[in-house]
Amino acid sequence: MHTTSELPAPFVHDLIPAQLRTLQRDSARRNDLQRHFNDPLRDGQAGPELAVIPAGVFSQGNPDAHREFGELVPRHVSIERDYAIGRFCVTADEFQHYAAAAGHRWPEHLVRTEGRQPVTNISRAEAAGYLAWLSEQTGQRYRLPSEAEWEYAARAGSASRYCFGDDLGCSEANTGSFQIVGRSIQGWRRFLPFCAPMNQAVEVGLYPANIWGLHDMHGNVWEFTSDLWQGQADPNSPGKTGKWYVTKGGSWFESAWHARSCARKPRWFDELDVNLGFRVLREIH
Image (cartoon, rainbow, N blue to C red):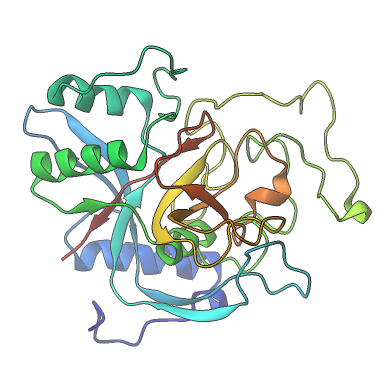
C-alpha cells in the first residue's frame, strides 16, 4: 500500500496537540475537505458529520504489565491512508431516516432510542444495510472501522489510558462508574449529585471531543468494528469460540476501566443490546 503523502507517516505519540491539529488540517487540505464535514445525501439532507483522520503510526494495545482478558500486547501500527470517521455514533434520527427510505421495520418488542441518542438494538447486518444505503446516497464508500482505525482515531495521538489522560472524570464520559476497577489506589471518582450514573445512553456530543473532534469515544455505547475476535471469547469458558467481533469504547453500563482506548470486548455477530451501537468510516481516495 502507498501512503497518502510523499512524507513518511509520523509517529503520532511524539506530537504535541498543536502538531496533531496541524496534521489533521493538512490532511483535510490535501484531500480538498474541511477538517469536519458532511457528505450530502441525494434527497438534499446531510449525512453524518465526519472528521478527517490523518495517516500516521501509533502504538495499539495495552502497555501495562497487567492486561484484562483479550487485550492486545502493544505494537506499532501504521495507518497508511487518510480516512474520515463519524464525529458521533450514528443517532436514532439518522438511522430512522434510512429506515424510512429503505422500508426497514423495527421489531416492536425492542427498546428504541430517540433523537440524538445513539441508535442501539440493531444487528451488524442492519448496520451494514445502513452503510450500504449511505454509500449509495453519497457516492462514497462507507463501512465500519477496523479495530486499529477505531483506536487510532480515539487516541488522537494520546498514549494514555484515555484521550484525556490516565483518569476519566464524570464530565468527560458517560460510564457506569468512575472507579478504576482493580486499581484501588485511584479510589472513587463519583461525587453525587454531579456524577450520578445516567443508566442509559445519552445524546451524542454532550461530552468533550478529543483533539481530532471525535465525541464519545469513551463510554455511552460500545461500538462495532469490522474485525473478528480471535480465539476464545470468554476467560471462564475456553470452548466459547465462533463468530464474535471486536467492539470498542465501553458504555454507560460498565465502569470507566472498560472505556480505555485499549479496552475491547467480543460481541456475537448478530447480538442486539441497549449499550451497543456503531460509528461510520468514510474512505478517502
